[in-house]
Length: 238
Image (cartoon, rainbow, N blue to C red; front, side, top):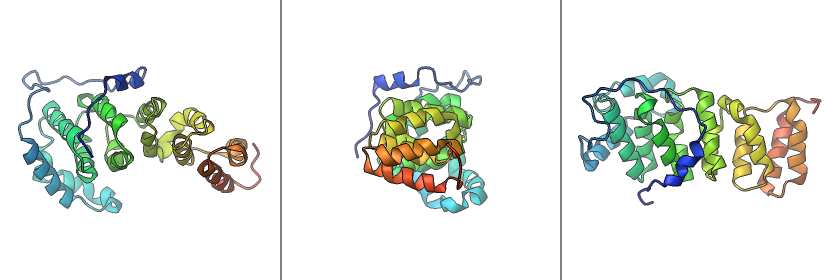
């Protein structure tokens, strides 16, 4: 995997997306200053934290203690400068496990320092990277429905992997857009849309699912739609 270069056209995908309100920044801190630690030092510190990261099934019990580790504190204590260093690391790192750690650390900072730029990076990320950031991105201090719509904006710009992040209740904020994706009969876009829609379906969606099951040109869409129909309450009306 090579280091990612940001494409200026990606910013078009976010026109109309709500951006977190900025908090006053320390005038003595330059958010564009060069990182305090070199890339090699940052990678060493992130790798040490990766080894200390609790099992994902124990995040709710142990993640706060992880954030209290001295190395985690050191990488997040300088506000916008810390965000800049973590973003540069994420943009250049090829190992998803280390990007997962860096994204978790970003969640401790004001999203005004990084949210838009992180989305720009996410737009170019492959499936493995997208899946790696899932634990951290939903800990950003951004309203879940706003984040869901930002993710859908990425898919609208031709980056469907981001939809894999929407397998949670926040998907209801983008349900209409996901239904549109599912109807487009495109792989993997329509498949990923159905993965997400599973968390927002109700009895009124039976007709949609039956239509996809019976008429979609994408085999995996037909298969998933059939599975989802079977999960709806028996006897529910369209």
